[in-house]
Image (tube, rainbow, N blue to C red; front, side, top):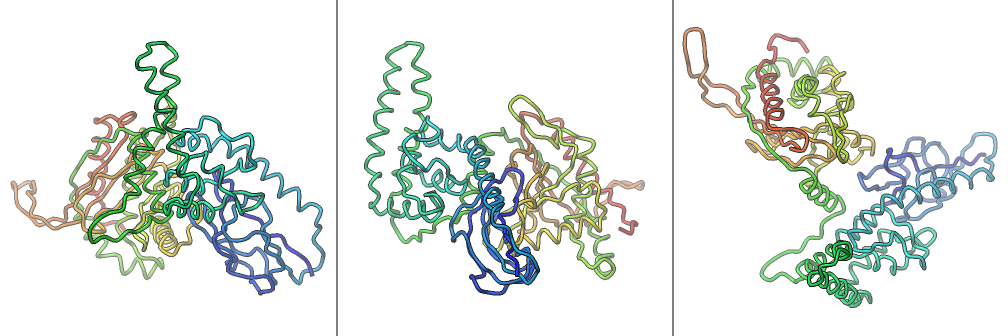
Length: 467
């Protein structure tokens, strides 16, 4: 018999911890290798963690809703292999990631501290100096200030505030049971008076004193509207975690990038005719269906190579040109939420590889099997609004990218065709394209030229190609 440690896996470069949502096995139950043992959540995506060995679950070290740093031992599995596990080295890997995590997360928590109008990154008289991104996102979306967060008793490991703790506090606060609810307006009333005093006093020190107080005043004014009971025949639905994250990300994108949207029209008749002709043979020979999405992506990657500024990001005053072309494709989930899995190095894949990647990622997204790495590293995004019948849309940029392309529904329309014999009217498959881009980097000439070239690539699809 031997004990095998199961550790919290690495879930991406920027992810340092995860919240345990559910254990699918209990101590004493049999588990197979690669069988799902638990479900976890990060600030980006939910995921399943498979067992790394076959045997019996000997011990579960963390409970549901606990926040666990990457690399920490979360369970032990008893196998039939010879040898014994050495308990001594197990403590070191568990402590090292925690130390590194606390240092790295301290930097990530700064924006949340400022949003809650608390200039100090952590209080000196509390043991709860470490909050997971999930807890911070919930606190930020629910209007829970940092001072309130510090007073919440944590039930997690080492007294940390868990998802369950913050949600219970929010529920108590809305029902009037939270003791800190009456203290916050008084605490924020004084900064508001301090912010008004510099208006009369023209001293140089006035702007720094009032600057950090403004978000707190605005937030306090918005809170009464949030909790006002609606009237009439209504139904109140609480946003789920993913919807809150999407909402926050979209608002941040609009606040970060000055959006400009250009439109174009493409005759995709050649694409439609070609796909209808080869789709049965393609699926039979390659073992996967061919949709329009891989066709679009192949054309987009060709044009991106001619317009490198479309494939970049912005950090302060620096433009980061991306050499890799990683195409994100917006995918609708059964819940109605959206997620953007990424096809890495799409320019190196042929049409078969693109089709298999598109179908695999879409299937994983709809069945909640995406891994965190599947949604990271995108450099350009395409969204197919035509799937839902829309002719066109004005998509919001997926930060930190600088452009996103929306393709509309394909419709048959009478179109004027230029022929050697003269103009004629024919029935063609037409589609609108819309490109939203960050005007800090992409000017109208580059954005419109890129969009025009994409439309030409669609129109010039080789109807005689194999695949």
